[in-house]
Length: 300
Image (cartoon, rainbow, N blue to C red):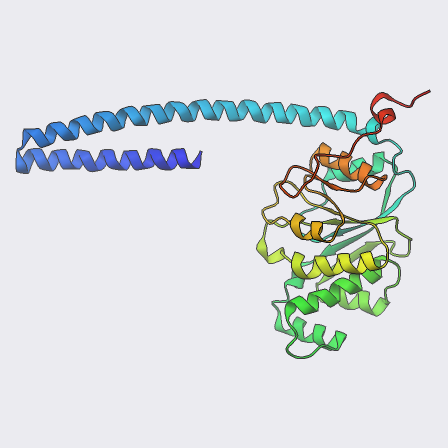
């Protein structure tokens, strides 16, 4: 659509230039041949203009039709989701880390609840993790005993390890207080509850929140080292995707968590079918294989 509009604007500009040329040519040069050629060129450009305009209208109508179909399919899938995932994660205690700049999709929360899982802790990465503030950088270096030339990436790795420790019920209250008071990370919920798994919501729309190569990877490494099951998810529309880095850590990934397909994939991945699911090039499969009894109802 953007290319079509640009092309139309270009043709309009050519129209104006040629019209000006005709005016100048007819009043100054007086050459009928030149004027006639310019008129023919305008006629051809005018035909192209109307043809492009007609094509744009057709494409717009088709896009609207496709969007409506997709919306209807999503509504249909959301209707099927609760009975499909019912009880699949019964009693499972889950921690969530929001690493990117997106909120938890409501559909994801509802899908986990329908499956019987409980989100018992929530950890949110804050804007201060960019470490643009010189005073904050100094305090982080002092707190972790780092050298003066320590880079922000190194500092974020230390912070990530602290976060992993906190959400696994091994955190020092002083660490929690330091991270929160310096606008680095916010903790909520019961970090004293043993977790069956940790969901990391990544993907960023603002590059100032893109910490995947330092914070996220260090967090995953620490969780993996402690045998914690990790699930990396993001929204399909995320401008800066984390899926490639997540996939290299050999954890389960879902790249369309705002959609019902992604939510179903997360539930069944957590129920015992790990993998890389979704619609981006990093996905190896659209979604897990659904058990027959989940589709047709419990077999007798």
